Length: 203
Image 1 (cartoon, rainbow, N blue to C red):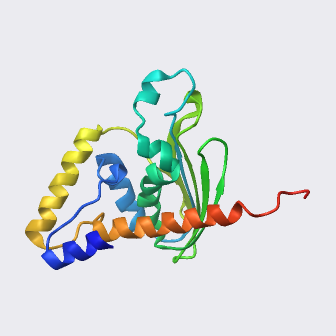
Image 2 (spheres, helix red, strand yellow):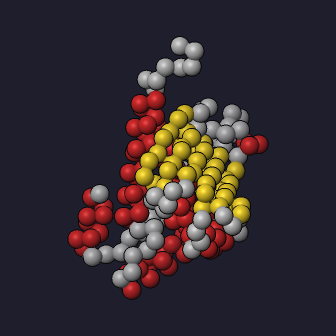
């Protein structure tokens, strides 16, 4: 909130780097689906393999904050950054833990659609990957992956920020959007905390 308030007070543009929103193929796909309607459900799976036993290169790619905060806060923003512009803002979120640092989200969107997200940094290396699938009145649609490097996506993010600064039109992924992602993830974290006290089946 402080970042949004500071940006508003200074009258400056802002941008949050959600990779899929700036990769050329995926950003175009997101825009196309956001322009459509009739969505029923969505699914966003972000399975990272940073902590695969024996995979020293992947483990070195990790950072202390990733180890502390886990997949919810690392890849959760990326999953939400794809679902929200298409299905609309989330009006509720429920979260439950899976193996390792895996977190499963169930979201209800203002459009009436629902979505799930599977978030993990502890996936076995053979099972890692990203997948987004949408189902609606016009059929089933799957997000393309690949095609842009992280550096190319970052360059497009910088161009978007410069355009916002020049035109005064807010970037789609600005600080206010980042705040909304944080609010949803915070609600998911509270859901995880409350679930910890629930009785196990059979108790």
